[in-house]
Image (cartoon, rainbow, N blue to C red; front, side):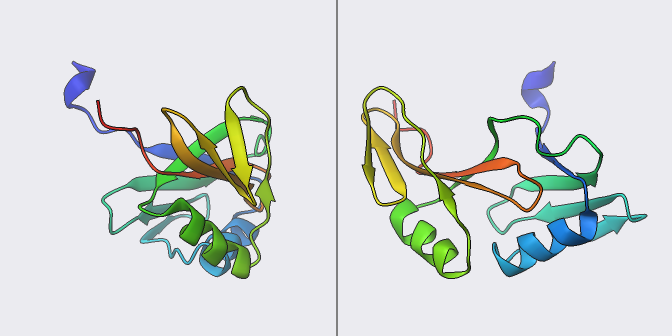
Length: 130
């Protein structure tokens, strides 16, 4: 049933204009569609779709709500840091840090940051091959 459906991320925003500016200025993303001032739809060249939507419940999750799987986490993190993105550091068993990028055996590289709405987002190297 659901194994043939697409899954998309929905990222909450308390201030849609502030979120639009963060995603444009810091992440280099432009919405492909706006829905009546209540949501922004993004499509990446990699084929992902996500929505940033207006809600008073933004930033309350405290955990990663969306991840970008990138080829080179350290290089992407450096590029985003140069644009003003500030990275978070977390402690977990087996996690080693090199600056803002962590490495965990079996999981690969990752770097976490918060958007303008205090949502936790992540760069990672994707799931390792089986």
